[in-house]
Picture 1 (cartoon, one colour):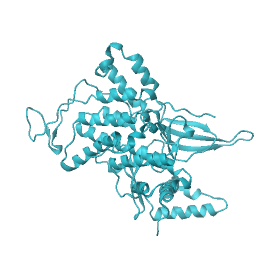
Picture 2 (tube, one colour):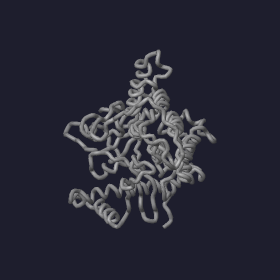
Picture 3 (cartoon, helix red, strand yellow):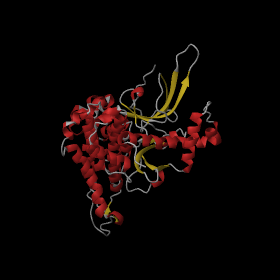
Picture 4 (cartoon, one colour):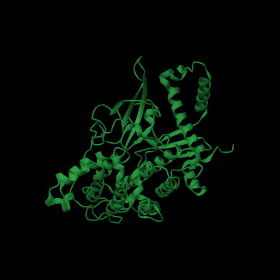
Amino acid sequence: MSEDPIDNNIINHDEGNEVVMHVENQQAKSILNIEKNEGGIHNTNIYNTIERKEIKPANKYLCRNLIEAIQEYSPKVKNFLEMTIDDSERANWETQDSYLNKAKDLLISSYASVLGDFLRKIIGSDKQRDYFGLSQAITKRTLQLLCFSFVSSLWDQPKEKVQQITPEQLKQLKKLFYTGVEPNISYYADLFRTLVTIFGQLQLEYPFEEIKTMEDDLNGENAFIGICKSIDAFRIKFGENETMPSIDEIEKTLTSFLVTLNFLAAYKMVSVKDIGYESVRKNSIQFVHTYSLLGVNKTMEGDGQKYSYQDTGKNTDAVLLIRDKYPDGLNLFPFIIDINALRDQRLVKICFYAWNDENDKTLVYYDLNKIPFEDNDESDVTIEKNKELEEIENDLIAIYKSSDRDITGLKANDGEKYKKMKLFEVYNTFQDAKETFFGIADS
């Protein structure tokens, strides 16, 4: 059977996803704080800053440091650094357009999980506000990926292991499951440290094996947690007086964050779209998996779907985190979902769990690409266990008790009820996770 190693170095050029690089060897100018037009420079009153629209951030510092940090996880990057760059230009290769363009291209194609598309956007960003919002999104979504991976792996452990988590650690974890607003970056940084501590105490295998090198750094007020909180401090200051840090300051802080997590370049994410079953007389049973590689580096054909024979099934509609081979992927459902897979649509739309309202029986997911300070709430996904979902739950109970388990009624009318059943499964699975860690709440 194929074990499907994932190609992590193909860039998608489908319509709407083409990687376009805008690189100009210019440094970002200082942001002035005035409230009138001076010297033909336009003041953007809303944010009390000035934008020189002809100037684009070159991202030279980010590109050089990050490309050098991920070379051990990418043969193409290693080849670029060792073979492409002329020896006479190694000291400042990032100042040469030809090298910088290639480095940006390689950076984007090296991340097939959360970061690839975000890196494409921030590298092409030409406005301070956009750069600020993207840096916040990159940091939060990356920390969420780390935390959701640890929580998913912890959930899969035997019950006796979960029961060894201390009350203080459970308190930190509980906020994730009971919060009524999406937590901030500092919370996810602290939760990440707590989860690493739990895995160390319980002697569990990390979902990211490379985190072993971060263990000592995660004790006390360490450098990495400090970087996360510095990025969050930018948000807090903006909320107080609408002051944004300079692009240069954001770039250097974000670079430190990404370089510390350089191992993420070795991981991929896929959305499982469908799992079929083949059994022919005298032949072995096979499962046909249909999945899509996430990020900007999809296959060049069609919508990027891949097909694979496997010996076993997988969680249908799951989003998987993969280090090497597809069958070994960690299931991130229901913390990260492909809402389009649940709706039986081919294209991918990844959403991250954000918050829930236990009283209203509501789960809220944010589109992966949701950027802070943008008015894009329409992309949010709300799953509410309303009367309709409760009726579907009753239908399923009756179907499972029946002799033929006929679901024809759910598949009628273009399968609308069946699609809503998938949403019920998201809600129900989230409740199962909550009960695993905190027990059944008193009614």
